[in-house]
Length: 79
Image (cartoon, rainbow, N blue to C red; front, side, top):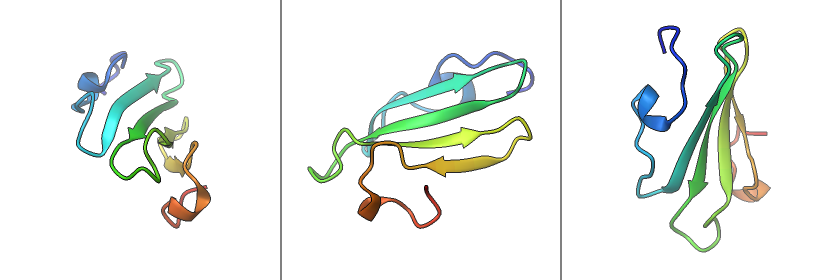
């Protein structure tokens, strides 16, 4: 993000929604670099409105957080 505040998905080149994410949200703390990208899933009734989140730590490393998604539908590396 080149040291700029991130307040909306468009600030990092993302759309606010896609065919598979009814909404996409972002958070970011400029001072620490910590942030997240959250997708409210769309499509199958089995996952509709569940969320999955990518979290960024202060070291710039990303991890997957399963959010409200049922464990059986989470990617293998997602907690």
